[in-house]
Length: 283
Image (cartoon, rainbow, N blue to C red; front, top):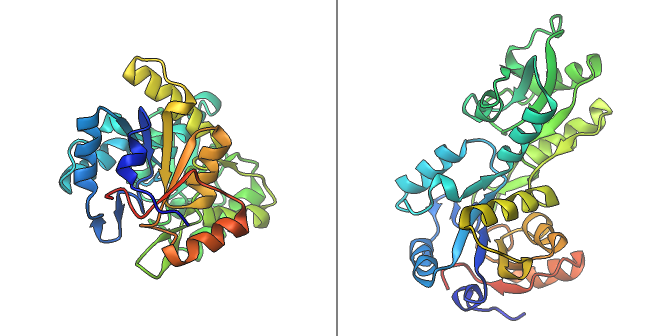
């Protein structure tokens, strides 16, 4: 397995899409060397955007979190989240009524920002659902996993609603050796139980890559081809396959979900092949 220098790889591209968790940060905070890497990209004139499936916070809140950890260069304009795609869907397809959600109050920002009423599933009265027009799965926190997941299934059995999954990640690293179930994993549980087909946004779906590509072209006000873009991620089944399907080059880093000792076996087993493998973005 050929491990390359990320900085040497990055020099080949005009635009870098960076996953957040496992690439820039983990459960302990910002990963070592990330601040220097951001400075390197700025010095080289390489544009970069954080392309994340995190729908638990608004882009403003995500940018504030980076700034509080010593990276003010990652401004709100540099953050593209799956929640933004879900918001666009709600704005175009759900025009009125109350949207019920799983998640924290702050994650409901994406629904409220398009003028829709919101109601946490924990507050739902199953005898009074006439005004419900959609359900959105936003975050893995902010509700009772037993009581409210059961209630979500019963809502969907009683009322026909579109279900939007704002984060397709099934798990995320909780520590060096453990993961936690993410929103995509919750959706995997609820979908067959409710006998519905959910609408999923975020990597690996190509829609978020289309959105990010158009966003970058508009933001930079320059012509960019797919050959000019590199997707950097720590997960084969979201970051890497998503970038591959969209037709841009991909770089797997071994600082998150995939450990170096397992990388070659997982790549061989899945057939998901990145263009590059780097230890981290700090090299």
